Amino acid sequence: MIRRILTYYAASLDDYLHHKFPQPEGIAEVGFIGSGASEKPCKLIVSLVNIERETAGGISAGISRNSSDYMRTFAPLLLNLDLMIAAVYDEKRYAESLSVLYESLLFIQSHPYFELDGQKYTVEIVTLSVQDINNIWTTLGGQYYPSVMCKLRRLAVDAEEAVSSGGIAREPSVSVTK
Image (tube, one colour):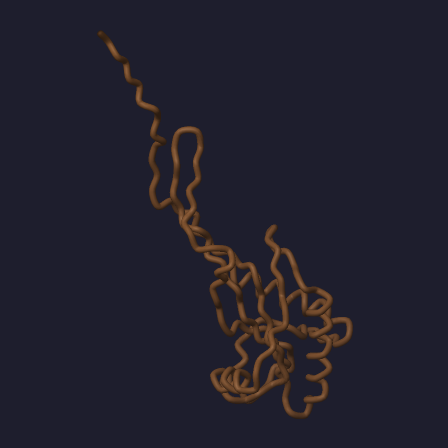
């Protein structure tokens, strides 16, 4: 599901940017930023940097019940995805990379949410300190590209497996005889 979400978001971003920056091979795609390749793709790359658990929705196990039975399940795992959106261009096209990044910021601002398979996801820009930026880019391979960090919220992971089940206790029937 993570792949589908990122691919869908990158395709939406590509559609938006294609009008200003027409490239037959597209301008935005999902990829790994720190590949270290000498040849830059000259594209906007959407990359997963981190996955974090969202605890605001609760962590308790759920119990569902019908007329005669109950079933205990685990609550869905609610996740947020930290995405790096980077304009990975060679040095000669640095000014163009800034224009592409700016247009992607307009996309993020004007499309703060999207729906995929009936699930609504939100995307927001995250402010990073200079130290955080340095740590991330060092981890990704050391070369900085113009970029923005975003948080994609509301991914729910649910295996829908039952942990246990059982019957519902009934009132005992007691008959008293003399």
